[in-house]
Length: 256
Image (tube, rainbow, N blue to C red; front, side):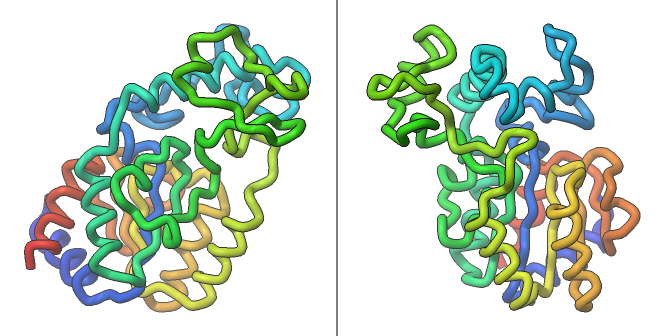
């Protein structure tokens, strides 16, 4: 990593009070979770059924063919249960502990930010989470993942018989209103620094917050091993694995 670039970002992180950290699947790749797209993408092709993953993991498929949708939800659940937050998640959580104006906007549904200690009140999980499981019909608790993964799929509610699901945002479903309201509110307050980590930046609601920081005169940084939709628009691009760069970057900052 270029030392001048590292020093510039270190100085910005140290000085900034309001920081927005945007994270994607690349951050959890170093925990052993495959990314959905990009380098090492799990779903760059079609599913076994010949469908794009966007079709298999969609709200309409959950309603029409819950067994098919749950086949891939279970894959995600098993992968997340086997893995754990890595040093980058913990470094971000520590930065949030030291800087009350540091927020995380994440596309990840693995819950690793919370498990690493990121405060829930400054964590925007824009695509939801894998827990808690609930019946989509009556809202009754759906048990835990360990029991569910050992049972036939799709899991059914013991109260009304409808399908149990996690509170994730499937394709063709609306983003959670509470998360959007929180994001819009904090963007109105503004951020001095935005750091995009491990995301291909495929969605407008991920790209726009970063660009808004730049338009307001703040510094924008991208950490990613590959080129993304943001790469040509940020002030600083740091090419490499999230774990390597975040450990070096925040390790220096937190030791200052």
